[in-house]
Structure formats: C-alpha cells, structure tokens
Image 1 (cartoon, rainbow, N blue to C red):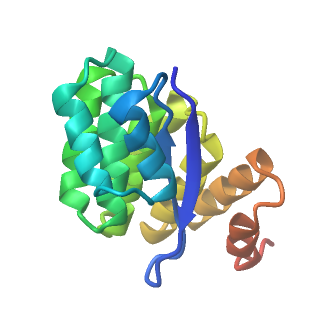
Image 2 (image 1 turned 180 degrees about the vertical axis):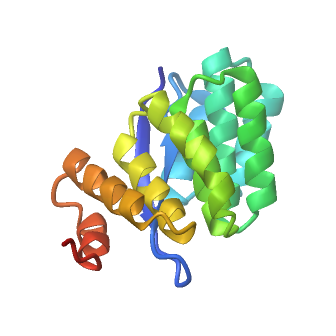
Length: 180
C-alpha cells in the first residue's frame, strides 16, 4: 500500500482541513506528480505533470490510483473541487482500497461546505485505517461539528490528537470545547 504524507491547509471560513498525497513507488512523471502534490513547486504546472504521467507512463494499478489522487490534491489546493472529486472517483475505480482517496474526497467536500456528504468518505478512510488516520478523524470532526454533532466532533478531535500527540491544530480545536 502506498505511503502517504499529510499537509494541513488553513482556510478562513472552515479552519484547517487535512489532506494526503500518495507516495508513488519508482521514478518518472508519476513520482514527479507526487513531489508536486507534496511541495507545490515544479518547473511545469503540477497538474500538467500528473496528467502527462497518467497519459504516457505505464503504471501499476496502485500507482495509477495514487497519481489520480495526487492530481486531485493539486486540483483541490487550486480550488478546483469538482476536478478533484472527479480524480478521486477515478482513483477509487482503479484501487478503492487506498484510504487517502476517501480522506481527500472528504476534505474536498468540506471545502465545498457539503459537510453531511463528507461523512461517508471520511468514515470509509477510517474503516480502511488510512495511514493518515489522525487527519481522517480531524476532518470528520469538522464535518460532524458543522452538521450539529458536537459530541461526535469533540471525540474525533480528541482521537486525532491521541493519534498525533502535540498536533497544535487539533489542540486549538479542542480548546474551544468545554466538557461538563
């Protein structure tokens, strides 16, 4: 199963949501796509690199799904949430057992303020025990809080902090709650 790396993005409206890039084994443009998703810096457009990798490279099922997921992360970062969701759907068709697909789908839906719809993919990411389980719990907490499940949000923020101790973003979110 490909390794994942998580980054946090701060949004003024929703607070931070977490997403994951999926590590691609080997070299070539698919690996460049992963690097572009991870760092955001390339000579060519990051999306172009990923698209070229998908069009021209022979990739394993797992790496093809990871490359779609990484291109989705790039699109999501650029605010193209529909394009990102399309990429996550393609990744799922190819290899639906990668938790990062669902973690990122949930993040895109959160950015689109579709909090209720974000719950199912985030639940799936948690069920698959995505490598970035703390991020899945964190994002699910955001979705739960925005759908009125305050107790559930608190529990997920707490779980995220347990999974990634001293994570400042989760600590800040928990500090907003008072528990009786």
